[in-house]
Image (tube, rainbow, N blue to C red; front, side, top):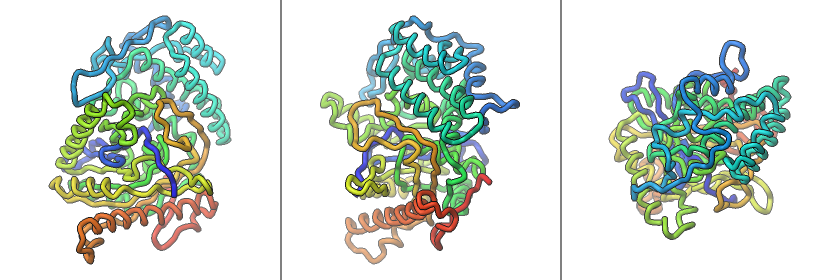
Amino acid sequence: MSRTGSSAYYWVADATPPLRNSKTTMFMLSTPPTTTFFVTPTPRVPFLSSSKPSSVSLLRSSTASYSPCCSSSSSITPKVKSNDNNNCYLVSAKHSPANTSASVSSRTFLNAKNEQELLAGIRKEVEAGSLPANVAAGMEEVYNNYKNAVIQSGDPKAKEIVLSNMIALLDRVFLDVTDPFVFQPHHKAKREPFDYYVFGQNYIRPLVDLKNSYVGNMPLFIEMEEKLKQGHNIILMSNHQTEADPAIIALLLETRIPYIAESMTYVAGDRVITDPLSKPFSIGRNLICVYSKKHMLDDPALIEMKRNANIRALKEMAMLLRSGSQIVWIAPSGGRDRPDPHTGEWAPAPFDTSSVDNMRRLVEHSGPPGHVYPLAILCHDIMPPPLKVEKEIGEKRIISFHGAGISVAPALSFSETTATCENPEKAKELFSKALYDSVTEQYNVLKSAIHGKKGFEASTPVVSLSQPWK
C-alpha cells in the first residue's frame, strides 16, 4: 500500500467569465482539516517571445514604480507571530501585508546576465548576511536540478529558458527572505504589479513533456465548465502527487478551457506558505490556508492555535461554496502519494473516508447544486516527494522532464451509490471507496499511456485519452 505525506498545496479558484457568481473556487484538501492545494485568470505568457515579455522582463517592468525593499547588505527582517489567536502566519515585523514582497523586487539576481553571475549573487548575499546558508544551498540545488531537467527536454533555447526562469525564482525567493510576505487565511493570487501566476506556469511548462502527456475524458471537463456557468459547485476528489499538481493541471487544461485552468484556488498547508522555495509559487495561487493534520502535534504550544485556524479555514470554504460556481479539488488521502516501499510502484494513496464525507456534506448543505467527480493525476516523475514524510521545512527537490496526465470520470451521486446500504457509516465508506476505485482505474490508464508508452492505445471504454493542446 502506498504511503502518503503532507504536501504544501491544496487549491481553489477565482475567475471572471460570465458566471452567475463571479467567484469560482478550487481547493485541493487533505484530511479535514489537513493540508490542501489550489489559482486566477490571465493570458498565458510564452517564454522568450520577441513580442511578449519573458519572466525577467516581467520582473523588471513590475518594479518600475517601486523601490527595492532592501539592499544587498540588508539583514533578514525579523518575524513575529500574529496576535490573532485564529492564525499562526508569520508576519514581517517591518511591513504590513499591503507592503510585503509581492509588490517590490530586489536587484541582485535581476542584474545577472549569465549562470556565473546568478550563482555569484547567491554567495554575495550569504556573505552580506542577508541570505541564510540553508536557503542559499536550496537555491543552488534547485538551479542545478532545474537546469538539468530543462536541458533534458532538448529545447534549443533550454539555457535561455533556465536563466530567465531561475532569475525570476531566485529574485522572488530572496525578496521574500528579506521582506517576508504575509499570507492571510484567505489569500488572493497576486497578479500585479508582478504576475505570480504566470511566473509559476512559465516555470513548470518546460518540465512537462507534452508529446507524452494526456488528458482523460476532456468532454467531462467541458461539462463541468457548463455547470459552473449555471451556478453549480464542482468537487474533484483526487489523488495528489507533487507540489506542482496545480500548475500541471492548469497547464494541461489551459488551451481548451482556460477558465477552469486559471480559476483554481488552493487550500494551502502551512508548509507552502513558510518554505522559502515554495512561497513564490503559493503567492500566485488563491489560497485557503490550513495546517496539516500530519504536523498538527509538532509543537504542543501551537496545537490550539492551529486548530482554531483550521476551523476558520473551513468556515471560509463553506462561505465560498454558498456563493456557487465553485470548483474544488480535494485530496482526501491527506498528502502526496508515495511509492510502495517493497515494489517501488506508485499508486493513489487510499482516501480518508471522513475527509470525503466532510466535503460532501459541506457541498450538500451549501445551497447551490453540487457534483462530485473523481479525478486522477499522474506527474510524480517531474517533482517526486521525499520517500518519507518530513517534519522539517526545506525538502530536497528532485526535478525531471517527463510526461504527465490527468483524467476525470463521470460524477458520482452519494444517494445512488449507497442506495442499497442501510448503515450510515457503511454508506460513507462505500461512497469513499467508489471514488477511490474510479481514481485508481483512471490512474492505471494514464500509467499505461505514459509509463507503458502505449499512448492513445491505452484508452478504454471508461477513459478516452486526448491531447487538447494540439
